[in-house]
Amino acid sequence: MKLFNLSQQHIIPAEEADPVSLAELKEHPEAYAVALEPDESVEALRPFLAQITLVVLHFPIFRDGRAFTQARSLREYEDYKEEIRVTGHVLPDQAAFLRRCGVDTVVLSDDDDQTEWEAQLKRFTITYQQSIAS
Figure 1 (tube, rainbow, N blue to C red):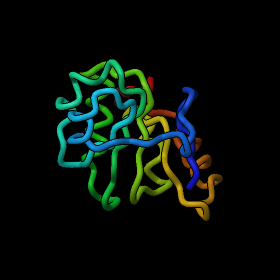
Figure 2 (cartoon, one colour; figure 1 turned 90 degrees about the vertical axis):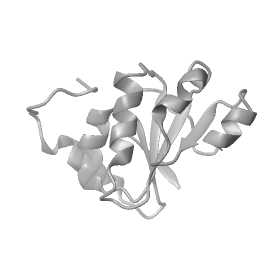
Figure 3 (cartoon, rainbow, N blue to C red; figure 1 turned 120 degrees about the horizontal axis):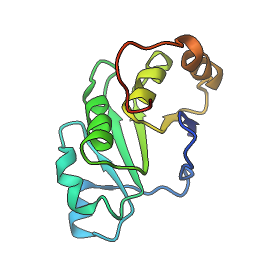
């Protein structure tokens, strides 16, 4: 497993991240990383966001866009400034959209080619809609 950095923000190394589930977070409020499933609400994290330095969102399949909404909600409505990471079935074609929604890092498999991800970030130089990243 390797991380692809979409932002200029400092990221937590993969081997140091040990996210707990939302249910575990409620039992262990000292945790600093949480994994939020697609059907879980970002608002449920509100009492813990001051101490959380990593939120991991999951794409069960590439056409399930709920993690995009969760990332944008964390940035826009919850004013979350720390790292947002995504896992699961993500494609290099989604790189620019992930960054525009506020995602910092993507978990890639060891055999994924980072140059494809880098190329996708350079593909479009203009956007028509507002972004969390702009």
